[in-house]
Length: 258
Length: 80
Image 1 (cartoon, rainbow over the protein chains, first blue to last red):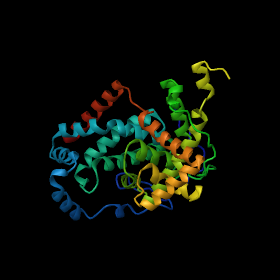
Image 2 (image 1 turned 180 degrees about the vertical axis):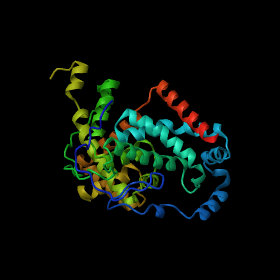
Image 3 (image 1 turned 60 degrees about the vertical axis):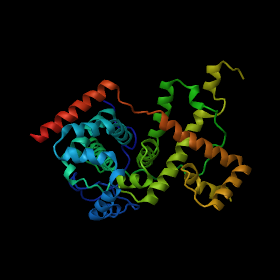
Image 4 (image 1 turned 120 degrees about the vertical axis):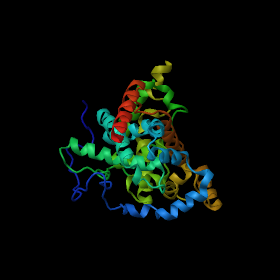
C-alpha cells in the first residue's frame, strides 16, 4: 500500500464544520464562489434543452433511461467515463487503491443520486464533481479525519516567471522509453500543489472547459484560470530539466559523444 | 507588448481564445522579436500535449473490468 507522499505532515487549513458528504463539496478558500451561482435556474435550463432538442448531448437520453430503471443505460455511462474518473481520482489522492475505491463509490453515489441530477449540468461534469468530493473524503480518512481541501499548499516558492528559457528537443519524449517517460511525467505532476494539479488534470488532460472545471471544483472561473496558468508554467519549468535540447539521456541513447 | 504582458496572455494564446485582431497582432509581433517568450509558448504547448497524449494513470484492462463489474453489481443491488 502506498502512502500519500505530497502534503502529509504539513499544516492543514481548518475548514470549519463538515457537511454531510452528499450535500456539497468540502471546499473553501478565498477564491471560492457559492456553488449555487454556477447553475442556471432549472426551469430555464429545461426550456433551453427542449429547444436544443436534436442537438442534446447523448448522455441526456442515457441518464433518462437509467433513471427509469434501465441498468444497461447506466452501464454505458460507466463504460464511457470510468477511466477518466479513475485518473482524476488518482491525480487527487495519488494512491492507486484510493483511486479504485473512489471510482466505485463515485459511480454508485451518482447512481443513487440520479434523481437529483438536473439537466443544467453535463452528466460528466456532475460525475467529476462527485468524484472530486469522494477523493477528498478518502484523503481525509487517510489523515485520520484531518481536513483536506483542494486549496491547501497553494503557496509555493515557484512563481509564474519562467526561468528556464532554453528550447526543448523537437520531440523530447522520444528520448525516453515509455516507462521512463511515465516516471518523469508522474514525478513532475506529483510535485505540484493539489489545487494546481487537479485544475490541470481536469482542464488540460481530461478536456473539461474552464467553466466545467470551475463547476466541478466549486471554484470561480478566475480562480481556475489563475491556477491553470501557474500549473502549466510550473510543469513546463520542471519538465525542462528533462526535455532540453541535447539532454544527457538523449546523448546516451543516440550514442552521441560531446 | 512586454514579456510580462505576453505571459498574461499565454493561456489565451494556448487555448486560441484571443478574439481581438489587434491583440493578436501585438502578441505575434512580440513573439517575432522575443525568442524567450517563443520558447515559453512552445514548450508550454508541448507540456500540455505530452500530458494529454500519455495517460500516466491508466488502469490495466483486467483491473478496469473487475472494477466495472463491481460497480454494476453494486448498482443492481441498489435497485432491489
